[in-house]
Image (tube, rainbow, N blue to C red; front, side):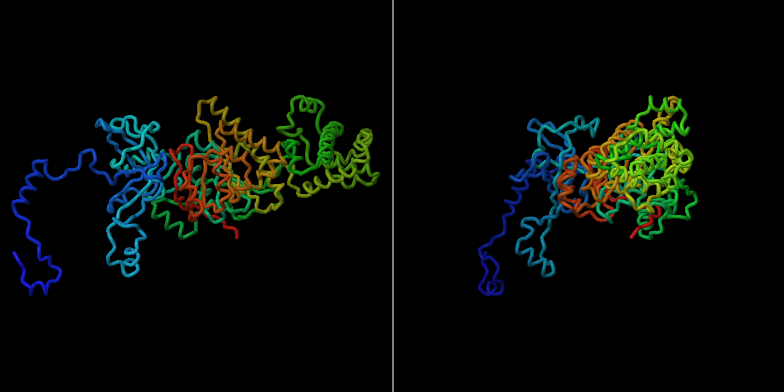
Length: 622
């Protein structure tokens, strides 16, 4: 067949040599296809897949595989989701792997590079000719399923890589929840990449008594995380104690007034209200950040509960002052017996059985120690009139007797400068009037199941005083928890859990303080180790994780990491926190407020989570 010149002139793109395909040829091709089995049918074992594994490249890494996903299936395997990979072996058998999406899925154009010139031109001029696209995701292999048909989810370490072109199947949310081990009674938030998949941890002695670190820069959402964890812990009947250094949590008994938080909670179907059964404590002579709270109690510190070794560390004494301090401490014991503050039998019993690395001397008050140091200073300086400056009525009433006792010690005068320094440091603490007023804390009440105790230290600027309070309460709570635990075991009951939240943990346990206060840290370390066995958990909260020593990081097993922008801090945390992949470490720098990477011992792997909105009122401090 030919085409005349006129038609060629009107239709210049027509190939004048083209001829139609013979019908016989078309029929022959159709017959061959039928003979070969008909149109292509996807094998039954591949049906339902959303993508296929790709060939490896020079940039490929052990333990991960790349997966290509069709355009319509990209949304089916969001980041952090779990997938099942069925790899067909040469002998026809299958190896089945579970994997997690750790990078992507990213959208790539079909047949062109994403930065190809035609795509850039098209995109910047209305996108008229943009091509179809596909997805690419990087999958981290979690393990090989031992018996995928009968016991799915039971894994062993993978011995081989999935073969190229192996089909990839998304797991249902119920399977993901089980595989990630995020089931439990204590809710944290929604796993990123999912609409309704909640990250939870179980109310189990293997989880929260293993201590928690909540880290992140200011504004990252730590307070929301803390408030939510307190709310959830109370729901499972844990006793909660929080050291509130800024007064931020003094109104958590009230529902949140934040409209944004309310909207978020309603969208998630959460019933948010204030924390019930809260009790507010503050030091005597200090104020609380929420004077309208219905249950407020002032408390003082009992000096005789302090180990003198820990106390002298908090005072920050040099070697000479330390020697004077312990000399005065020993002399004060004798003075107490001399003026009948303590009986001879009590004195002997305390001397024989006491452990000054754990507790102080019974009935010794700070004013007793101060008065002895003041009398020593007066004797060495030949000062008259020391009597009128004494604080203790028992010692003041027998001043002459005590002075004679001190003079008989024949203390060397060249050391009087150090005695004056010790007296000055003790005097500063005595003048605070926070010691030995008889308003002690009831540790049995503090560890009552379901009770939330807020220790408001916001009106105390002196970090030494804060550290004294925290140290004394940690010791008291630990001792009470020991008693509670033994009673529960004796009666065949489930031991109650107590959680202690330490805000601004870097001030209490900074690297500098640890080197200067080894005795205090050894006490904290002992509490952390023994407490874990007695269902006593510590929660360390700080926006300055760079100041936490390695010794403290080593005590922590569970982590909630909000935004951390400092690369040097992230590098250091990598050495102490395991399980996070490179993508998660990289994401730490850009997490939005309320986002966090959660790593708990109960979870199969760390997860990026949108923390639930706060259920209660936070008194934000500007």
